[in-house]
Amino acid sequence: MILARSNEGKKQLKDLIAVIEARSLAEKDYAKALLKTCTTKEIEKLGTFEDSYNFFKEEAKKSHSAHDTVGNRLKDELVKPLQTFVDKCTKDKSNLDTKLAKSKKELSSQEGEYNKVCLVCLEPFTRTATHMVQYLSF
Image 1: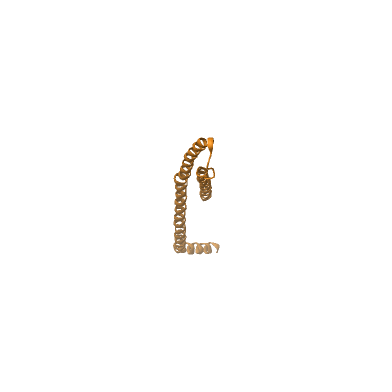
Image 2 (image 1 turned 90 degrees about the horizontal axis):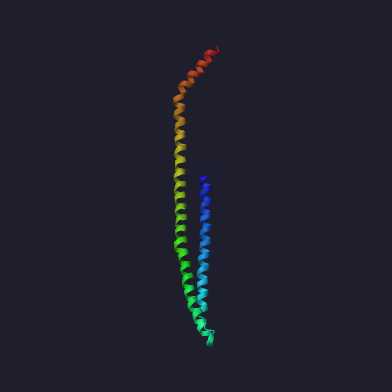
């Protein structure tokens, strides 16, 4: 039960990381697209539209900066710590599995030794009980 929940939690975290990475990439792509609109050389003479276009370029540059920052922060402040946590959990689970396998092996070995000791200790009683049964059956 615990192992199943652990595996499900790990899968959910990986899915969350994928969603955040996709959002981060979308923010960065949008920021690049905004910057590209500011650096278009196609329009040489804008006439009366030039002031409006310059204002648009400045706003687009600010938006570019904001979206680029959001993209970077998503990656740095969410994805990296979550990935570190998933990696740590995977390593801890691996260590636990190794210790558990070792404990099972030791327990199995001890159980074998216990059974041998029991047979040796119980042998005199078993012989006595067998003799008593034979004696009482006459």
